[in-house]
Length: 382
Image (cartoon, rainbow, N blue to C red; front, side):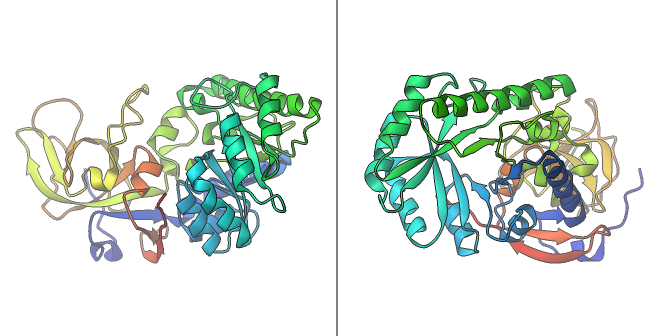
């Protein structure tokens, strides 16, 4: 197979490094934002995938938010960049509430997440009664991880009552984690409807108990793209869609041509007898996430493209060491793929965009021709 020449800008980049195709990212954003706009539902994009102010500004519907974060480190970095309407969508630990109240005193309207009376009491004690901390009750819509069952009226009411005086009920939030196991349109639509129905039920239960419940929040990349109705929902949260990845392609949410993120790597060795090529991108560059291992087609630790981004059929990163990635072709036996000289540049599509991006401190932004047009720093921390 003929391998296309390396764009000149990519020759100068140290490897491994993270490439972001700006045009693909833009199409991904436009696709979901357009869908939600047509449905008339709000959008609070999850920043945990991108962790980048430049990307966040393209994701959000307003200059200051709303947006969702997965760590207080993300919240603090976002707030420093002018994003001041935030949801911290991981269950609150009492020792983190001081950082939440500091953010609020500095002008950031940040809400927290909880699913127990104990957490609610901690919020009540830590918050300022003059500016109570808004708390969203996490709803367990599918037994995936955590949260209150949507019909548990006693627990929902007890949590709401326990929030005063330093907190207040902001609403309910759920995440259809089991949607990642759904396959096919019908299953994805069913997961989305179950997510919607569960959180709307919880909101109704609270309202019947006399509690205001202004926010009704759902969110996962698969359900955001396959929901047939958002009736009763006030906002959608999603994050992985901004780049997409091999997991999302395996679910059926996107095509391989939609994946905007890749890791640029260099061929540093060949072992034809064992049928593999070695690149300088190990788990420190790609992550050790094997999200496609349970899917119908296992993509290993990533699919291999040439430096122009053209997929090289049959080539997969099948094993990783800390700084080494092993690329193999289809089947066993001697190497039957392209004859990559030492120094060849390759691009690897990630299994899980969130995990791969987390290994890097910046994006090298490329245009449709593969030219590097910008460098965007990432933020992180807990």
